[in-house]
Amino acid sequence: MDRDALEAQLAQLRQQVSRIEAQLTAPEAAHAWQPRGYYTTYHVLAGMVLGLFAAAASLLFNIVGAAMFGEHPLQLIRVYLTFPMGEKALELDTVRDGFVLAAGCCLYLGTGMIGGIPFHLVLSRYFGAASGGRRFAVATALGLGVWLVNYYCVLYWLQPMLIGGRWIVDMVPVYVAVATHLVFGWTMLLVDQWGRFVPRHEPAGLHAR
Image (spheres, rainbow, N blue to C red):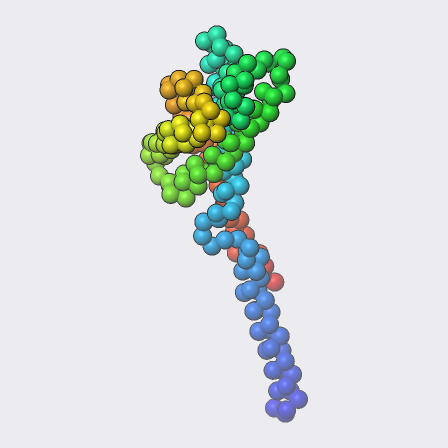
């Protein structure tokens, strides 16, 4: 076989090698952005979104409960607003001070978005494959833990120091505070699957030519 024929055959082989390499690397390149482990950034953002749902559920729980017991429907928000506003927040009226109460609701929901992050991270990262009963116990423990930390490790001393009173701890009955945090935690458990990151796997051979 002469030299020209050998060079032509070599060129064909090189082209085949290039095509095979392209086929091998194409699927990897298509999924290069996907994390190999736990996608923390995604789950942080998902926790904020799910926390909004959980906060809305706990707020609705309080509105219905307050109406059933003859209290102002937004009594929780009025007490909640004592942190920035002090005792005058307890005199807010739905009609006259509707904008302030609406802002208080938004602040409450925003706080829930922040609170949803640790709930979702714990449930999705460490208990994603656990049984339903165990996940329920974890969500309950998280809810009670957040209540204890918020009320007796932070608000108990911080609100008197900054505002001059302990209205949130003193005015919100223990059973209401506990129930509110449990509703939040249980709602996070119910919607936890909505925030899971599932990598997309393309069928084998999709990039083959």
